[in-house]
Image (tube, rainbow, N blue to C red; front, side):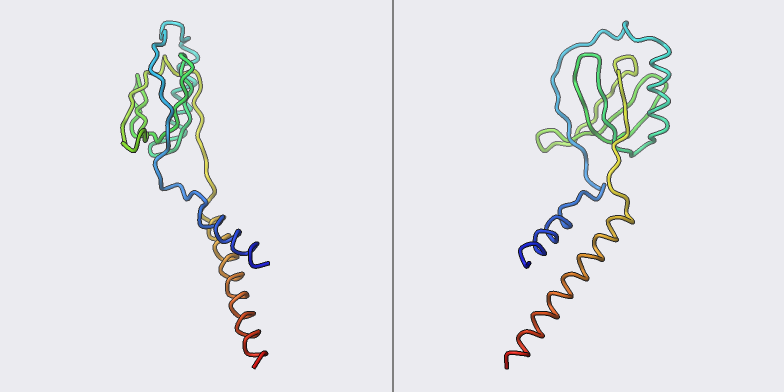
Length: 139
């Protein structure tokens, strides 16, 4: 029982809270931006604007590279994503014509995290009360 409670507590503590910088796997190969259709570029731009600045996104590029990071700038021609590689924060400018797919990465809501924290607090309080009652009952 105690192991299960501790496991739940550790899992609660390790849940992502949305404040960290996302990671990226980078392979440096070139892409052919001329193969992008204007209609596709417009869809990608719309997805970027809908996601908004400071949102976490996953971007697939024409060269097969996948990037996950935080949007820090959106212009008419490109998207700038902040990412963490080798313990260094960098930004990457991505021309919309090189992007094949973009989607927002959503984590747990603050309300859900608050509810999990409240439940974990109640469980810990129950364990403490049970231990104290057990010690008091043995005297």
